[in-house]
Length: 119
Image 1 (cartoon, rainbow, N blue to C red):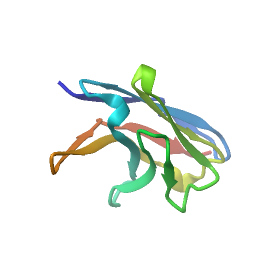
Image 2 (tube, rainbow, N blue to C red; image 1 turned 90 degrees about the horizontal axis):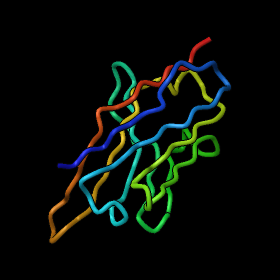
Image 3 (cartoon, rainbow, N blue to C red; image 1 turned 30 degrees about the vertical axis):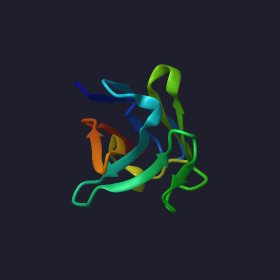
């Protein structure tokens, strides 16, 4: 059974930092592309950051220079280090894992962790 479990969400003041973690189980983690998405109230879910199995990364323009995605394949973990947080970063953050196998896209989601940026 595949599970992605996020943790680390919290209430933080503007300008603060948080580190989100995602623990994966039930998949051959190192070959999966992992990503963080977020969804704010009343808005569509949006891609925040992506990291491939080989460690290549990509970020949404809104978080470039502030967020860093990383992974530890030996621990089946992916992280999102968030700094200089803004109120507009408030959202539920979701961990995502995906790969294409024999032409079929395999994709898994966690249940999310709430990040609230407010004074």
